[in-house]
Length: 202
Image 1 (cartoon, rainbow, N blue to C red):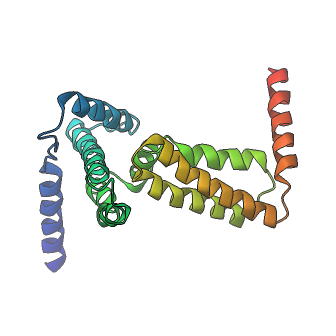
Image 2 (image 1 turned 180 degrees about the vertical axis):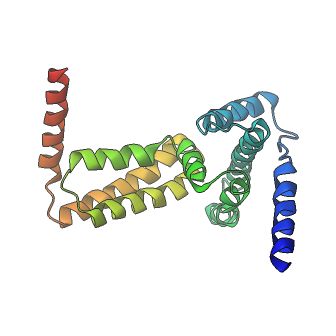
């Protein structure tokens, strides 16, 4: 009986959550800016291939609202980095919490990558291609650092600063690999050579 009641309550809670509509927090914002952000968010959502149109709209609005919030924080505290960073940290985890009501972890990862130009998967794959001899634990560390950089990049105010965060972590990764005995100059030259050889075979 208790199990039945638990299942019924859980089902009711799930239905209530799924029926909620996420409003677009665009009041007072320039119409052209709102449309630009909606388009940016929609492009990310399109990549998720969500079959449920209502869910897709909710996810789009969550992403768009995130952009609106970030812009507000950066504009409000542009002359006070400490308050800006404190405000960004306070709101940092809200995106994942909101998205988790509608999509799974894989989709959340895709949203994060969509908001940061896909730098994590592209850079990670580039390291795998450049250094085929990487050990499993080295691959894991590289991916962990790239994802850490992504968390900072997601809150950065523009594309240059987003890429700047990845640049810092790429430098850390390169220094770490060099300290482990990898000659990155030779690894990179060999990688480019393999790329050219593949092109010649086509």
